Image (cartoon, rainbow, N blue to C red; front, side, top):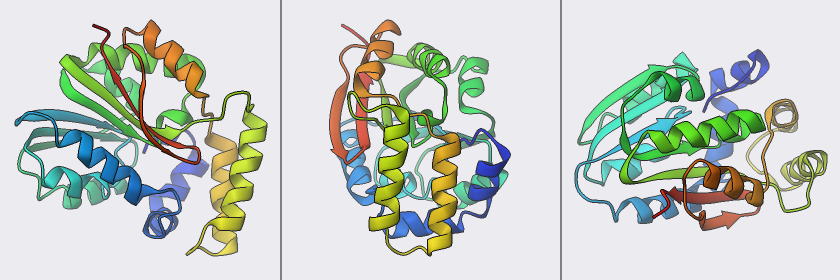
Length: 233
């Protein structure tokens, strides 16, 4: 999970609050990664995957451990997260690479191609021009018949950013379990300072401009979507 400023990096460097959020399933990680496993289980043996903003890879690692992956490449800005990822990924059957870098810069700097470009709850930190560049470069990093698999928060159509932030933080404060009130305050501050999700129509438009076909929505849980983009035929 790539974070754009020091406050966000300090928040996720400790990983304690984030891991509590995941453990309590407040952001639907269990359902989401069951959906991801179902999709990836249909891939041919020996596929490669680039994980942008990989964090500690704690949710994706057990999914991939049961699949015939040949190569995993993880990218994140946090050294702490990458150290944890190295441990969590040890059971993978294929080769593993980890890189400390910004997710967009890592795409721009590499010429490697992958069967799957994957990102979970990271792209919404980018500005709209950065998201546009992300889709364009991600498309160029895919093998033939490859896919961009995106887990992210997505605003409702006609829901502007302030309305989204207010609604999301209100839901967080009311419904999230397993974290203390002061930890909810930290989470909301992180969201307000760093989250810039688009609506689905905008994501579809910029993905088509980049050369992808129609966006396939695999599932959604409130604002949390699992989206699959493949090259246009």
